[in-house]
Image (cartoon, rainbow, N blue to C red; front, side, top):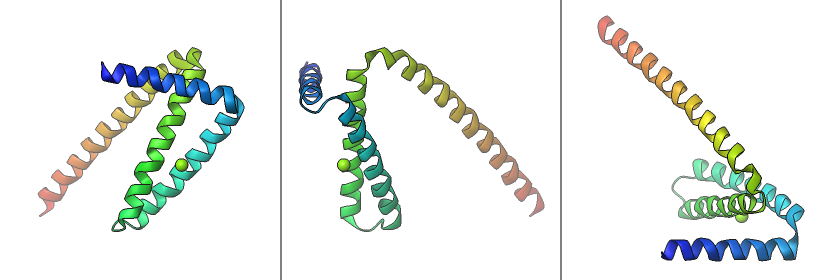
Length: 115
Ligand SMILES: [Mg+2]
């Protein structure tokens, strides 16, 4: 129940943002947030012991999630296309993971046989 209220509250905020800044500017903002996430991801990997990098990484993931939620709110007609695309992508990556896993197991067995 609390979650549903939060979702409704977010949708209202997203509509207010759209009215004040406009859809086009929010797409530009999406691009900026994606760029910030790219940079934070890079620094998170390069400096794994710096806690500020972890904080920045989490913050930028949150920022991109907000932008994606906005896009889904503004363009509900994309919902089906997004879901179809996600399903295809997940099936593809799942096949790839399984293939790599099988190949790795084979190499492991070969390695054991040669020792
Ligand atoms: Mg940001």
